[in-house]
Amino acid sequence: MKKIIVATNNEGKLKEIQDILKGYQLLSLKDVNCHVEVEENKETFEGNSLKKAQEIAEILHMPCIADDSGLCIDIYDGWPGVHTARFLGENATAKERNIYILEKMKTLKGKERKASVKCCITYYENGNYVVGKGEIQGRIAESPRGNNGFGFDEIFELEDGRTYAELSSEEKNHVSHRRLALQDLVIKLENHIGGIK
Image (cartoon, rainbow, N blue to C red):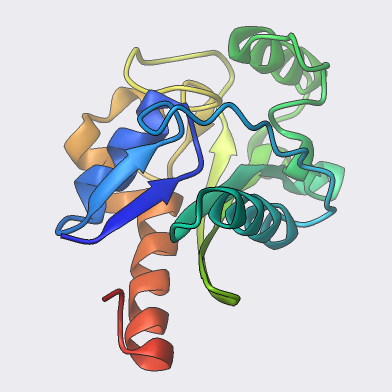
């Protein structure tokens, strides 16, 4: 079974990817005792995911998958976007970021709350790379709801009225932006380089 590094220490993210990308031995940075922190300083999700995948792959001499994803709010021209995890500083918690967004949007109604979540996942090996992309449309909820998930899941409401955090793990994996990006990645890998060997 092919071993692939997933450039994360986020257990929730790793589990999502493992649940979707079966048939490969996926290892977290912790699994291989890698403590490298790649600086995410690009202005696009694709740029950050490629930078992470390339740097980790070249350090460990193993193929690597890295993703970058975020919440994009229409009325703010896609903010916080690539800065989703860091717009309040490196030490802010997801809960603090979510409260900030809800407070910022407290007077907005209906279509003014439209948002999307976007994900880019890059597979990098020996100088070759392929990028998968996924996007889900929704809106920002008026208050946090749900206990299942991480990051902004409790404030991102799907078109069926439930937040990401109100879905079971199985339900989320069927509809998530990360699933769409992984599916796109797998198709492109098959088409471009004959799949992951």
